[in-house]
Image (cartoon, rainbow over all chains, first blue to last red; front, side, top):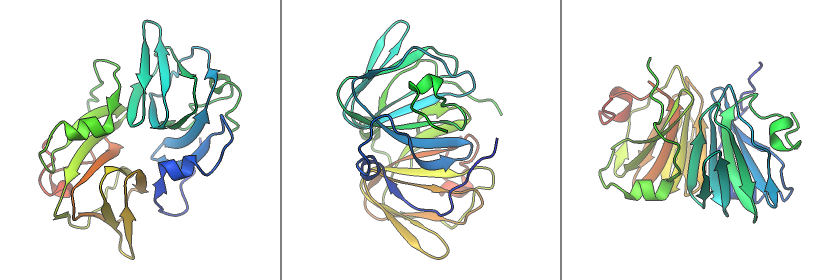
Length: 122
Length: 122
């Protein structure tokens, strides 16, 4: 898979980037770290189906707001400044009740329409 | 190289983790994302030598405080919530004047005593 590299080395403020658009469930790519991509997503009133990523761990970082990650045996509450890394192969789903602004990091190719509720476009 | 995996899936609050220790230039490993490690570092009155990482991009995220990344042609100021990804092979050095709490992400094996001012212990 072709790996896009950023054209320019520039700083990004995660909150400013999240506030630069208002569309829910839109994945704004804000960087690439080796073979991992960084996307900012805003979500609300959303609970995805349980799913796994077989080829990559997945990091959720909460920029602003609250969300939950549900596993088979428990629910983890995440607030501003919290992150969690879901290991590859582990069944999980995000639950976003109120508006949350998140940074996601996982390997390029991990996100698909199927595991994002149809909203990941690439 | 052996990749340590976290024993348990747990959330981490980056500011709480940074505030859980006071030692400067200590790398607190807070997670692993595939072959990348996450470390929290506090620094102050520190300017490393220019260096490159030939095998990995490097991400600096400012949890609290301010720092600078100097490149050959410019200096980038980073404040709370800012991140920058330094591509592999690009000459750079962090400059930390006042106290800054940062999250670093790069491939396992990237940090060495040589490129951390002697403070990375593993």
